[in-house]
Image (cartoon, rainbow, N blue to C red; front, side, top):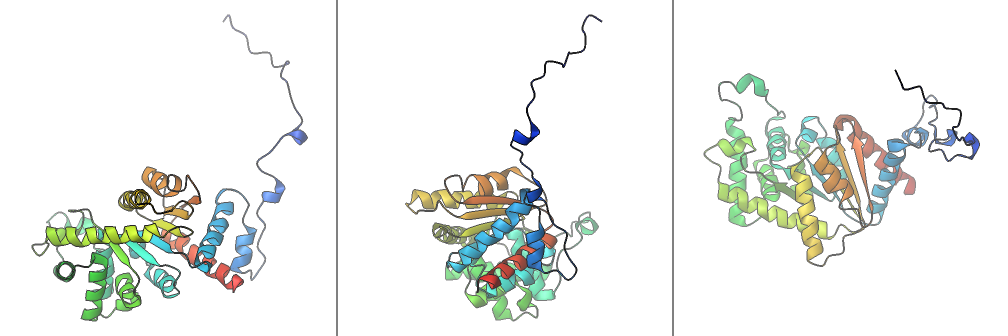
Amino acid sequence: MTIKPQDLSGLKTYSLYDRHSKVTVENFGTPLKENSTLRSFMASLPDQLLGHDFPELVRRLAKAHRDGRPIIVGMGAHVIKVGLNPLLIDLMERSIITGLAMNGACIIHDAEIAMAGSTSEEVGDVLGDGAFGAAKETAEVLNAAIAQGARENIGMGQAVGEYLLRMDFPYNDKSLLATAAKLGIPVTVHVAMGTDIIHIHPSASGADIGQTSHHDFRLFCTEVADLQGGAYLNIGSAVLLPEVFLKALTLVRNLGNKVDNFTTANFDFMKQYRPLANVVNRPTAGGGKGYHVTGHHELMIPLLAASLLDELSESC
């Protein structure tokens, strides 16, 4: 061996007490006392990373609502399958959520909940014999609703919601689409052809699906054009809705709408490229702020809803 260990005696040092540090004891979390409230829990969080960002996001959403600005929720179907419809419905009824944007799977699971009070078949049990997605009533109801929507020249979200109400299904009170139709809240459905089980049924019409979903894209653009000072939350859509949101945003800016200061947030199990780029970072690069919240929807969305209601009650 011809090389020797480095001599460290010449290292230039500085004082710890003069150095800038990113973490101080003032940032630490505090233990909760017995019988603590949600507000004290939020105040107890360490002032670091999501412990800082989550309360800030809640405050920004509360301000948007107090200022009468829109809060739009884009969502994937997993949000429905983990049982969060009642929480979203409550926020809709309080006029906090002003619009929903869904992928095609959402209308399937939401309609099955309305019809039967249950949804989400076990794919592994039925895929082998080709039975996956062959539920008769699901396809009949949704494809009929979409066809009706095409005839009436309305969007898919409105068409399905109104159809569920007309059919007076027993669990309509648990349906996002039926509730939105009753409240007059816009729901837009953004479909990728071939991704949803109702597309394999003979009652599916590509023309009707395309017409009603494109109508909804244009309606969504109208909502995004009014997003200044508001918020867009993407919950559980990793590809489709982040792409739709970015296209809608660039369109309305191209048409001269000022949408450069608003709040965005992405809620998902992991960090993924498109939600981070197309929801959190790019849209707010010129103003506003974007947030990413990693965690299970069945925990994080109830926490968000409860914290937001608590924040709004404080300001009343």
